[in-house]
Image 1: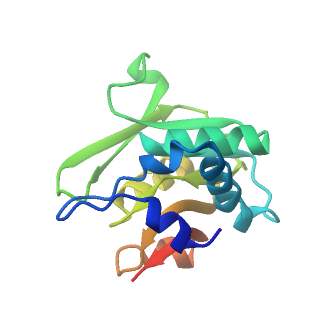
Image 2: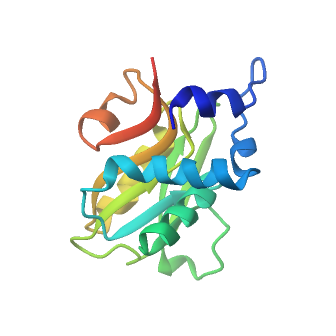
Image 3: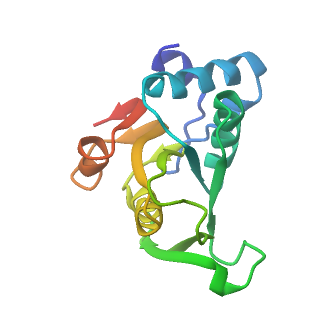
Length: 172
């Protein structure tokens, strides 16, 4: 499907972020969305999928089922029920300039794992960069980033150039 198809279904609210949840409420649209998010990576070998909290979980889960690959969750701090010693954590400043952090289980990524990152919307790139940090600290290699939309700007250019970011729409 083309971006124009999905773009008509996404709700835009003035001075707020777009709501992509309408893409999940129609099973045919959702199936096509998942196929389109996977398509740029069909010839790329990846071992695991890392999905970002929260809407990335929906997309990442569906992609994991479709590709039969393990799903690793990058959770907001405090959400994983575990001893802090078994977690790896990184902080970032989000689009609202608030300091936040992501966690995942230590060793959820093994040395040499090729990883596909999945999220719904990339504006500043800080959340994805934080997850890249978690993956690389564990010895993984990011072979691609799949998203519905990614803004192209000075902050996100590295995601396109070094990490193979392939959104359905690259917004300039």
